[in-house]
Amino acid sequence: MEETILKIFARSITRYFAMVAGGEAVLGTPYLSAENESVALDFSAVIGITGSHRGNIYYTAPREKLHALLPLIGEVTPDDRLCAELVGEITNTISGNAREELGGGFMISTPFVLEGGPLTVHTAKDSTCYILPVTWNHHRSRVLVSIQQNLATS
Image (cartoon, rainbow, N blue to C red):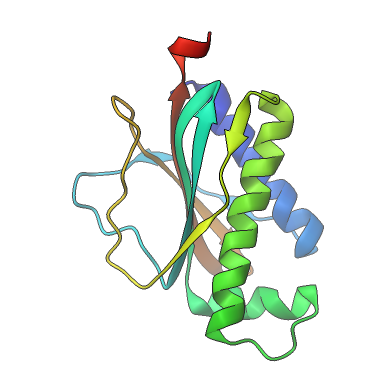
């Protein structure tokens, strides 16, 4: 995967937290997912990527982080249903922000939400999975990026 793709997703993540949470997220150093590494937190969502690129994007976060974010978008009584909706919305927004930079050929699916773990990450064929650690307001989460340019559409 190109370094530029990771930079695009890094910008998408910080843009989301700057807009919604009124503060910048701090991104840790991206690293490769180890085989059989448990990456899931309490809530996760995955979006499939097709078109000019193929693969998937995951966002996974603990309940506490989502509970801290929900009041910022007007939800004063956080619950698990709202946490699941929020993790899907975050994944969709991050992927949509990346689509703005990568163009209309970067097609994203609707998010599929998963609760709990462990989570097996299914990467694109012949693709690696990078994990981008995200810290906001002392809460940690992760974005997993496993995409590559689709040579069939190039």
